[in-house]
Image (cartoon, rainbow, N blue to C red; front, side, top):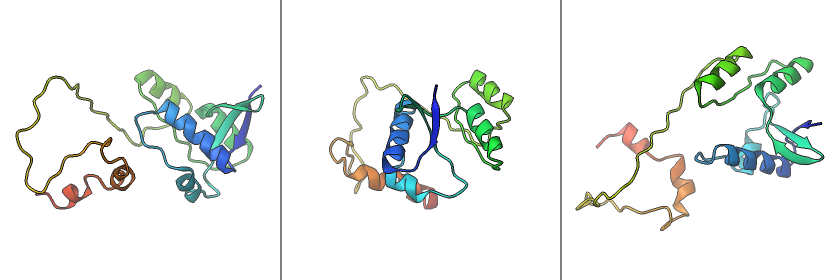
Length: 148
């Protein structure tokens, strides 16, 4: 039988983070320190264990039952990727509050651009991996606030 536990230790948050990265591999996941910084009495992050081993996260129905049992007034979040999952979530009282759309472009035999604008250096993440953390949260903001 699965046991449900609240994330408390750094190891718990690390396990929760690994599940998130596995389930949604194309998205950035907060570090353990960032997850800890978001702790509030109202926020509940749960792990499911079987025989002491972390096996996954908890579905919306289990979270809702646990919250009702403890008389919490929670906000429970979930992500879905298809209409069937959205219908399942709606059955348990979830409503859509945000929609994220992933745009993918297949790369083929395109020729590289003949020139880049002056003062623009194009790098790959492989060339400068240390820039990822600094760029992730701010990428595109200057464009949004002051277009060229």
